[in-house]
Image 1: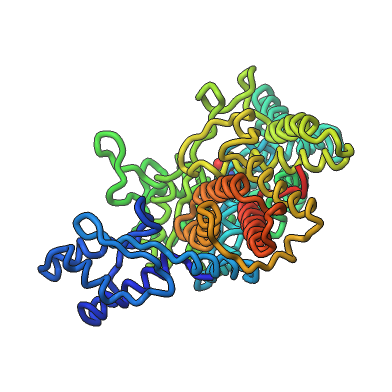
Image 2 (image 1 turned 120 degrees about the horizontal axis):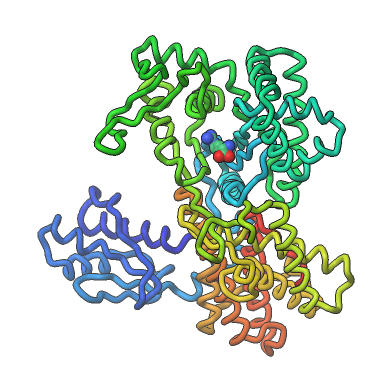
Length: 577
Ligand code: ARG
């Protein structure tokens, strides 16, 4: 299947070369969607200056040399020199038809890159919050999409599993016992465990002392302490995995690459940076000062890599991380799906790593910035009593609400089927809501809106796919049997077919821009194009058998693209709804 915009680009480039000489064969023909035709080529305007000719004349030359009769039906020069291009109906039909036999649905295979992808990264013995939810969902959609494009995605779940709080957490675990109900909280309500440890730490000097000694024992690798630490991490893993399972994300234990993994490298990193004069002691702390990173009153902001008490910071670990990803994972691109407020931190990490020679020019680090999730009151999402929201409770509520929706729409189904649908719809709604707005903007977590059956929502798209499946069920047909040939006559057929051809390009774009919301917008547009088609063009009831075959083929292609698109986003498409 061919991408219309690509195809036109190549044809117009050939025309440029034929008209103005071979040196124009690489010139950007500036093909854009048009209000007046399918596309317009805007190259004439920029070229006119270079050629010292009038834009309209240049446009006329382009048209005269354009060899595209098999693709383009109508050409028209408009305005100062736009070339309006309308695709041939039979070309669109043939390309849409070829989707049915293309397992990639027009998605190009990109040159394979190694892409370590840092996402999710919750903290041991702490509840995952909506911020973690969003990096998990966005990161997972990127992982799936980049893999489909042919890349080697190396998931790196950089969990917070090291640091001074572990002294108090281990002491608490030791006191309550590994098999106690209190320890079980780590799997169900980790904040409760953390707070219990914290309360002891704050109220008992003796416990606090023990905790501090425990940190030292942990850092010096005391076997008994390490065993307890492992216990703590293992219990937390049960919790993480339950969330991942509920969310249907692809992260498993093999993707864990937490802070502790880099522990034995931190001293050497500090020593090397200090020896090479990249880091200096300032107020007792070892700091890297970088040009261009200044705070209020032009004061330089340091990246602290060793605190004055000798402890290492979050930044030191991230330096180790970047070095590991370049050296061992052979990264071409390193993606960090992390909260937007950490942007400055990451810039300083990149800059330091570059200075140290750990981040070569050929490797691009990218911060996929995650915006805050707000409540309907416009403030950071919290429970009514002001506590932070438990993620599992939030997901349970989504499924519960979806259960009510399904009970209304499908009273005919048995309970188990309805429950399975409600799960897909509730979780799908939450995930899609996270994905459909650009990842760096804030967004309002609103159950009513995300569960709506209309608008750019997960349930709307799931419903569109389910409705198509029911068309085939009603006709006693399988979507796999629909083979066309596709013929395009009605306007709604044409729009739908042309929209289908946009899938490959938009998926490639998501791979380049790392913006899954573009795919959401595309799928929403596709579902709308299908609705318009279905309202205007009878499918099963089409009288002419050839028209019926063609429309069934378009319907089947729409289903495949919807289901594949949702799969790339990590959203399930239930068989019925
Ligand atoms: N654990 C951190 C948090 O919960 C996020 C870590 C992000 N990843 C990283 N490489 N810094 O805020």
